[in-house]
Structure formats: C-alpha cells, structure tokens
Image (cartoon, rainbow, N blue to C red; front, side, top):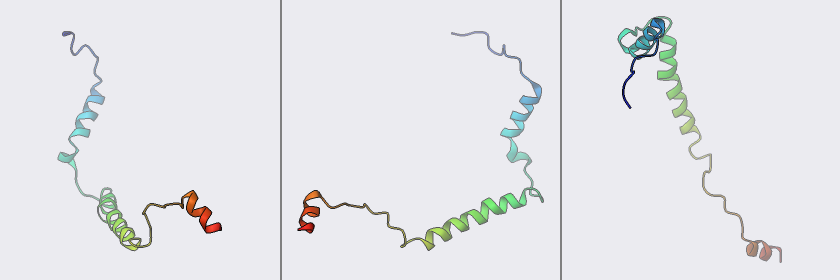
Length: 78
C-alpha cells in the first residue's frame, strides 16, 4: 500500500506553470489586455442575459403540450 512516493520525474517548467495557474489571484492586474475581458464577462454578458429574459418573458410558452386522446380525436370527427 505505501512507499515509493515522489518517484516521478517532475519538470520544473510544468511545476512553475501549475503554481502560477493556482495563484493567479495574487498577480492579476487590470490593464489594457484584461479590461475588455472583464467588461465583457462582467457587464455585457449579464446585461444581455437579463435583457433577453425580460424581452421573452411572456412570449415563450414552456407549458406541457397535451395532445387529444384518441377518444377526443374520434369524437371531433363525427
């Protein structure tokens, strides 16, 4: 069950990438490159979602579509 831990060869570049990936909150800064993504994900997408939800609120019917039974269909023909 136990034994032989850390026998894998570790690539220092991969380990550094993993560490930086897990600690991005420490090094994040708003600049010209990150600002459009922040505005898009923080403002445009939520506003568009809310607008579409309000605009289609009563226009889409999501209720069950019940078909007539065979007896009702037969009675309406006669």
